[in-house]
Image (tube, rainbow, N blue to C red; front, side):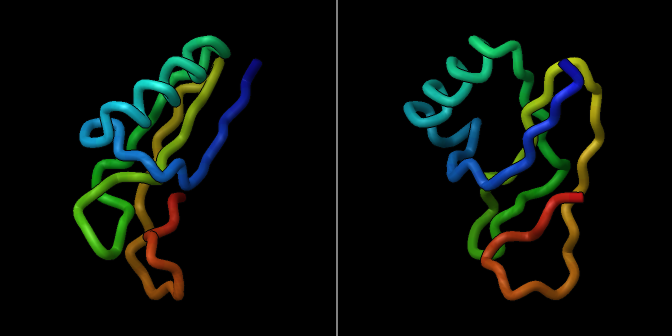
Length: 76
């Protein structure tokens, strides 16, 4: 209960149907709900591959667009 998992899941829930179906099936089996940021997280494309999964907590997440050495924008 009251758990939040943030991460780079390497799948875009709206574009990667096969990979996202497997992830969402696993998340659902653990009562986890996905929370997506309002903008893309990849610096090389318009994909959102970093997001959060939560159980028992309603969360708001944002994308930090400042300088980073990563190829992803971090979540806050």
